[in-house]
Length: 225
Image 1 (spheres, rainbow, N blue to C red):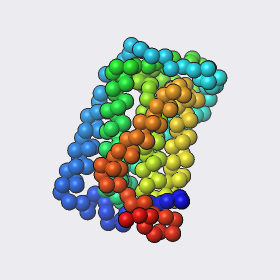
Image 2 (tube, rainbow, N blue to C red):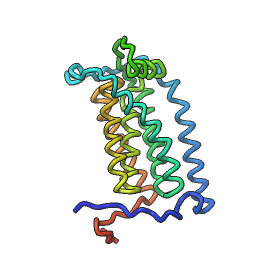
Image 3 (cartoon, rainbow, N blue to C red):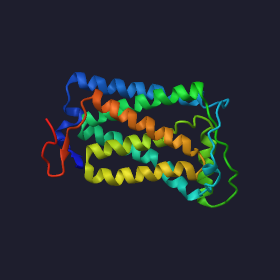
């Protein structure tokens, strides 16, 4: 039977938490910020694995997909403040899942680095200009697992746990972001698959470690003890 998740009362934001819980959130934010500083040094190569498949060879470059690709930064900028203000428990789970995701991804980047060569983008339209901006700001390494995919899945899952009704729409958009990573030729299919596996595993681990949301049936009754 399909289950939903009870939204926490609005008073359960970070401003209503104990000092201990507040310290935990601050530490998770600090660790996450510190981990992000390691992305650049790892994004240098040299490549050790080539994960291109026959399917990747048949996927065209679709420049307009750069819009959902870049929109992940907008989704992230809205997601964390919303969770912090409305559900500290969801915020802790999302932050811990992000930390676990980066740790796993960095192990691959350090010891099994991959590379995705970018095509030449010569158009003079706005989408081509945006895609050249993306290529210019991110070296073509750190590909498996795809962090764009992993963080999109992570946010989609936590929005579903946070508010099922709006979460469905956010998760659908996050799915479009995942697809965009392939159509702008930032990642191969294997990178996306790896990102999904890492993100789902991290979310489940974080939910267990943080005492995640209580599953409910559609009618609002408790699904279990």
